[in-house]
Image (cartoon, rainbow, N blue to C red; front, side):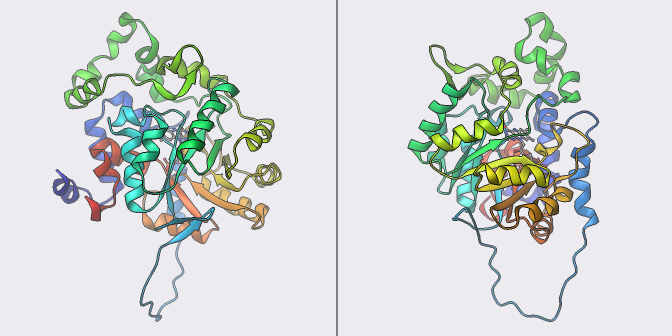
Length: 358
Ligand SMILES: Cc1cc2nc3c(=O)[nH]c(=O)nc-3n(C[C@H](O)[C@H](O)[C@H](O)COP(=O)(O)O)c2cc1C
């Protein structure tokens, strides 16, 4: 299986193609798609093509190290796996498999609040740094309980996502009946059930894994882990504000990373509110469409922050060369989202791991 995968996969687009074949359309489009006309989604990738290298030649570099440090954590190369919700729908290994692959590659993994695996299991799977990404689904008391668990089992940084005041208008999800499939009656689901029947391998793995996972880290007092069905409406009420950041600084002892900044003004505000790092991000083009690509927004944020905190970026990174371009424009490291999620969907942990480990 592993050597077969290696021979078929040269780049991330190859993993995307395998994921497309393996996943039912409703799951693939959830992963692959963006908001509205997907202008920002396309632009995130395309803009890397506009950046040209200006190499200096005739120098000999005997040993080339890609190692770096982000927030005092050593990374074997300047990339971090971004929080990707519903990963367990893409492959039963889900967040545990992704975290294990990140650890064996020597990089950090960020666990989304929207996780089907318990945060303790995700932490235990990796030998590297694991950070927790927070949405305020379920309210502050639910978040406090999750953060206490995260702190106790060794999550070493908190990532607060600020670009989801409302759910992005994902047209592919509407077309594929995501709402009906997650919460509708059997009758409402009927027009969409063929997606699963035509993907029997995915369906079998999903059923053996226990079907629709609950949110193991969003534990509502008195009723247990939040069912996936309630997440949409809970997210719609989960806006994070700068006041929440002040409260989070009181209850979270480690560094806080603010994710979803696109302007110098918001970057300065995040610094004033005590952020240790900022992620320049438009949520992979999944939230407000027609905002700037992350790479274009990066220099403004880097200038505004003026070396006071670390600046990371995500959005559109599909190649090593893209990482170099982001670093040249001022990022300390990049987060990657879809690039590894395609691999997870295609082949679980082996699809996320670097080719040398397959
Ligand atoms: C399927 C999917 C689910 C995501 N879920 C979350 C999430 O739960 N929390 C979050 O902060 N960002 C989430 N993101 C955004 C990513 O963390 C990241 O910002 C984005 O994927 C970067 O763009 P890229 O996919 O082009 O690398 C998600 C992205 C995708 C593709």
